[in-house]
Image (cartoon, rainbow, N blue to C red; front, side, top):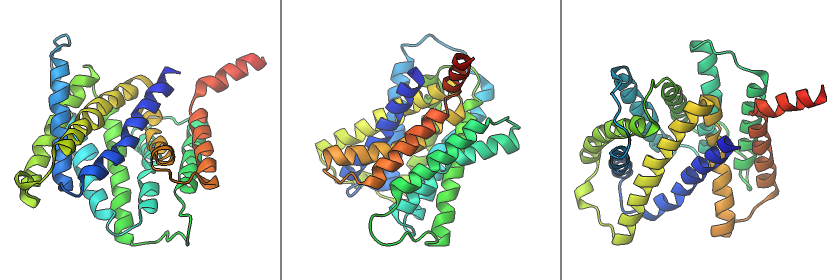
Length: 294
């Protein structure tokens, strides 16, 4: 049950970030916000690392840190920001939810990982749940949309999948140190981009918005990436990728309780299917059931 608790905590943190982003995004450039999140997260994990036992840096990990920062933070930001200009949010959420599918495909094709049938069933079932959950309540779903936007969002999902696999390949070290290094690299890349394309020194934000940015950096970059890396180390990349299915569920539930948004039948069906998908991903349940039957 610990792994489900960790998956739920990660999904809740990521699912709640949209509320905080909404409160600052109109007064702050998206590149600047991403850079500040990465920088605050890096500083926060650096402080935490000071209280951990000293570890020898594994030089084999440094190249991986760079590629994880690129594929997890920098590239997806650019691709998603551009892709959402051409497609609806519902289509975007479905395309980004393809991360577990691409993770499964990449592991099977390029890393020769043997994939269990239940893992395939759970990932496909989860994606069906996302489609039902994200389907618009009015009008028809424009699945084709803008081809260019769709391609960009699919590339973003692929980028996330690659970063997940690379996280699993990190050798030794604690999740705090791993993600501290990744976020520092992401900060070094994003900060010049912020100054190049935006004017971060001229941003007009109040003290409350500064607090929201600090929360985003500490929780939605630092803590959540640390927990994410921990989950990958303990349970593997496929199980961790299910957070991409749970996050929209958290968004719908928070919208219902906080924003008084309607909880429709399609939401309930989609959530139920996603929960069943997560259940199918747990091989131990079926193993215990088989032993009990014998």
